[in-house]
Image (cartoon, rainbow, N blue to C red; front, side, top):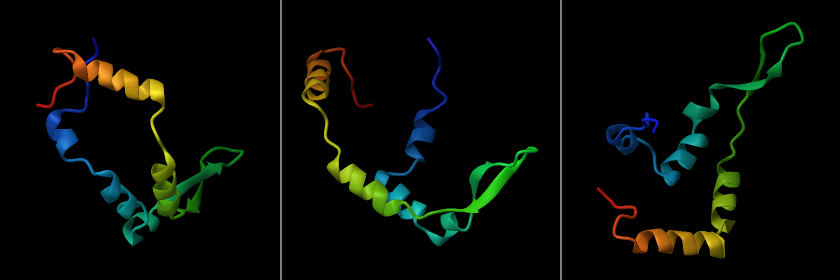
Length: 86
């Protein structure tokens, strides 16, 4: 089995969804160069970043788990050796 590079410490240092969306629309993030494609002779084309925070929030708000996904999570959680919080 492959070892995850996401250690508990690294996971704990990550952002929540709300923190990420706030960062995505921040002046600090929008000031960074974005990738806009490749030049025919090599190299990449710089382009300004877009503030997609409203798109992220809208898509998150309308996303729902399907019945099969809900059933699978309930099935896993019901097992004594299923997912556990540490």
